[in-house]
Image 1 (cartoon, chains in turn brown, cyan):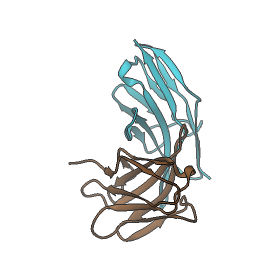
Image 2: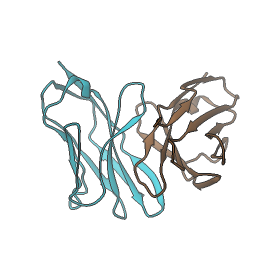
Image 3: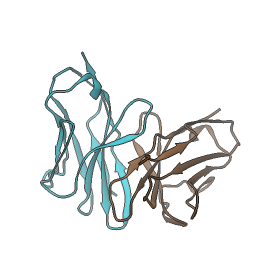
Image 4: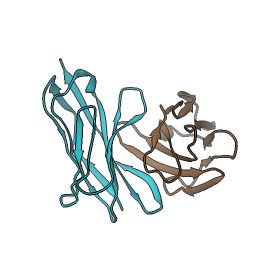
Length: 113
Length: 113
């Protein structure tokens, strides 16, 4: 059973470009979570999705950030018009229904030049 | 809101030393508690968890006991190895429909031979 997969592992963008981060949950998992880790900091919750639904987006910045988890395909975290402060590691986690334990992917390290 | 406080790092130990990493939490309900470990350049791996008061989670020689009276979940290991060098995160899930994990800032452990 493959684990949570994220791609790309590393992403470099210039200010003003768009960043698209992908997450494929573990097989059988229908819940996806995105977290952001700034340098020397813990992980901060961003958004929680189930298939085709955003359940909790209380940690998402109000502008430029969006997330989706379509019926088919991976979950996408999109950051429009990136700024240097968006540089961070973005982790995706998944869990099966009615389960508290979240399993994390290897992360995407975004660098904004 | 819910929060997790971990002891400040970094922690440096010699091989076979005893390890304690303190973790306390604040939560309105009865959270589940977790320890995650992050090796350099990787994502988070679940180390152990406890879902109710007085539960003890254990894995790979690590232990932590859910203490409701002191709102603590301290991580311990009797004899650390060089391979235990990593960053350790304490986290809680408050449940009740809020599935997100709230993390401490992490404690970096270095074990020297």
